[in-house]
Length: 133
Image (cartoon, rainbow, N blue to C red; front, side, top):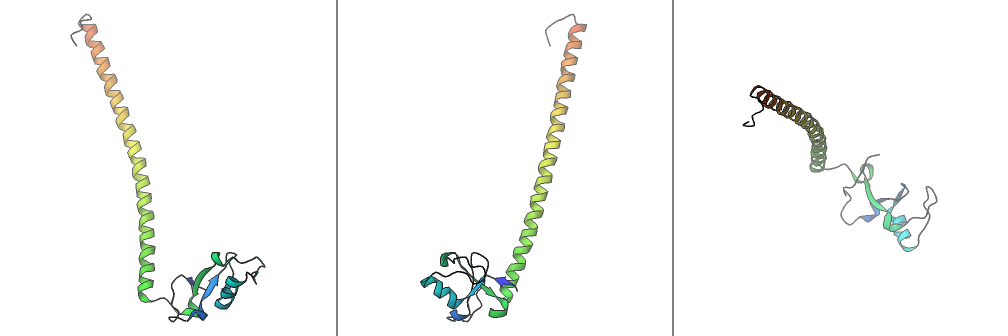
């Protein structure tokens, strides 16, 4: 049974509200009003119900289906989630590639530094140790 947080109940008709307890069981509006006055155990598992931790939920079979606007927003949210995940994966790949390229640049810089040092030493040895370089 699909559950939604969108209220499709007729305005002011709280008798059709349904609630989800902390332990995951559904209670009706009358039971919810009663536990606000006098705490009672859950009929599903026997745990005491704290009315402050009960969440109002809407079942399509009780309240009707979502409006086209809500369904459109849900589709958009799902598309945004997929796109966000794709962007995260792309960012991770780019960071890995950046590390790889940075390593390659550092290695090339080290090879260039070594080549320069070797050239300087070779020139010094051929010029008899002159320090003009």
